[in-house]
Length: 354
Image 1 (cartoon, rainbow, N blue to C red):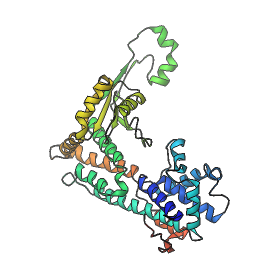
Image 2 (tube, helix red, strand yellow):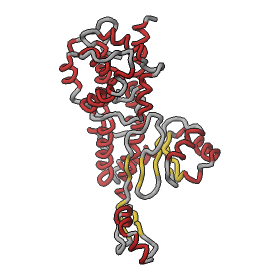
Image 3 (cartoon, rainbow, N blue to C red):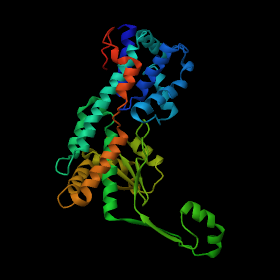
Image 4 (cartoon, rainbow, N blue to C red):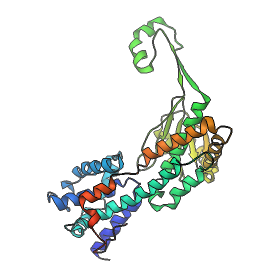
């Protein structure tokens, strides 16, 4: 295999392993773009672009997908390791990129293809009705599209959040915070703390608010930690992959909550229960919910009995969260035209698609 083939294979691997936003491929493309247009960097000298390329990437990703990477610095720097895109292979891509930017165009065509798949998802959810929507069909759309398959954990997370938030609102659940200590001295001495931290008044020592859930946002690359938290106690961890004893312990250690709810695929339910007992975390797990449970609750919310009260709000919340998580960009075509990528035909072994 030639050096060019090695470099292209490495780029294709980075694209294939990336989530829908393609942060790392965009960073590669922007390094090549600046190398081609201003000549201020040496592709073999990692330090000449390691940090500044993150800003180049973020500027473009904010324009095209409305987001910037929030992964750890260590995960971002993994891009340049030997099993991804080391400087020696990046230099080969620079040679292939030429004066027209054909490798850059290749990357942005891959992004365009991903965004086209996202648009199909958006069209499905935005036009869905209580009669037509199906949890399994939505999940299937992600499983069937190679470019979206790596982001399926976020689909589960969004499905869980939209459902839980809708039902909690419909139940009109409330949370009451009350100071049981009536000692006038401590109430006076810590009056500012009570107001600032607890949000109540030392004279009015009881507060009732609606129960609510909140998404933490984009999780880290290892897909660990908190996904959803509630102001009424439990933390929610959504898992669609096989859990190991080490990962369960890591999840529990990284979530500072006494009660954790785990959402998993049906086939994992019994294994997770057994694993929790094995590592001694059963007392911290409030409950385990399966995808089948989600499907049943969605069907109930969308049934004729509840669709007027719950169904439309649920689909609206789901569409909003999916649109925020998986933006379908209107900027990609103007961007490619401005850069001149639209004029580049397949040549030198680059087809324009990964």
